[in-house]
Amino acid sequence: MPGLSDVRAFHDDHPVVFDALLALALMPVVVFVPDSARADPSSLSGAAAVVAVLTCAALAWRRRHPGAVLVATVVGAAAVILLDGGPSTISFVPFVALYSFAVAHGWRSTLVGFAASVVGVGTAVALATTPWPPDSRAFQHVSSFAVAAAVGMTVRARRAYVVAIEERAERAERTREQEAARRVAEERLRIARELHDVIAHRVAIVNVQASVARHLVLSDPPAALTAIEHVREAGKAILDELGEVLNVLRQHDDEVDPHTPAPGLDQLEHLVASFRAAGMSIRHSVSGSPRAIAGGADLVAYRVLQEALTNAHKHGTGSATMTICYEPTHVEIEVTNPVGDDETDHSGGTGFGLIGMRERVAAVGGQMAARHGADGRFEVSVRLPDRAGVHA
Image 1 (tube, helix red, strand yellow):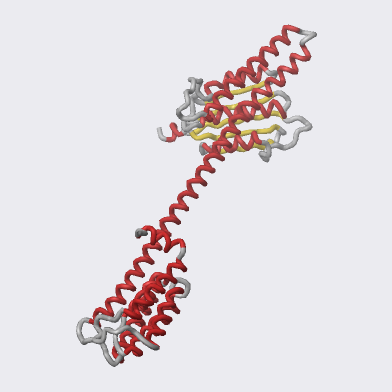
Image 2 (cartoon, rainbow, N blue to C red; image 1 turned 60 degrees about the vertical axis):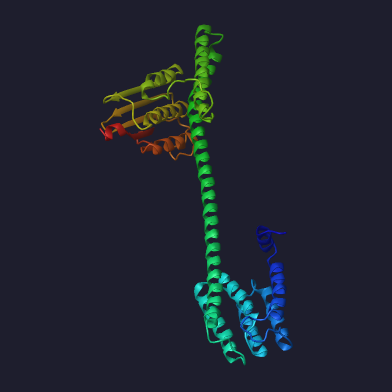
């Protein structure tokens, strides 16, 4: 025997077939089962039976045309009652039609359909030669249609609620996917920036020192060996810093070896020394009280100086001036260098180096400007907030 779940599954999978079977099932009921209020318990016959069959058949279209089916069943039920001369089980058919109409329409339309059903069938009963007894049958007639309308509206509200829940779940899933994609893009950009900062500076040193070693390998072997040693040290530094960058790609439960902290302004002397070892002339001055900048800006300051000096080394004449001014609430950094005759204006930030610098500075709430000065020198100026100083 099929259970309720099987019937519900068949109803959902084959709604048209289910409605047709429902119409067929009601036909023998309304034709052969008399109403309990009838004094004569005989079944329908003649024209009343034909109209009853056609009225039941209309239920096969109750989902596709609920309004038309409601009108047809009310008219058909009224006709059967008038032709048969008294109450009839045909009233079950407009009950079903009214339920389907309430499921498909709002409460205002349902109230109109309910009133039309009560008036149509009630008028036919009142005009019949054998009307219902003047007892509670009239109340049962009205309440039956009211129940059909109420159940239909309840089912409609529940379906709307389920649809709303599913839509919210889908929106939440799309939002989660978009957020995950955004975070992946931000992390990819951060890693690309970090790799650029690490590689550009060190590789520039390797390139310069390798060129020096090539020229001095025959004429001045000790100097060539010194240049090669610088190449080796720069290569080791590249590997160390790449290791630090690639650690962000590890899973949280992976075992990670301890590594040195991210560089900051406390390593400024080492940074300047590495460029000077590469043959670059750097003048730098520091004013105020040197300190680590809070809020992640210390790493940004180091990377900005590293990138600015690298650009000065690549595009300039081999010299640069660097100033750092520690203020109570912020730190100002400026790097200037002469530009070679064949260099173009890079202040627009078309290179990834300047773009990365601007993004880093903006990420910690700072400001940056890169431009050609009036004296023909290229200037990079940065102002980084010190959140520790702001909240002191």
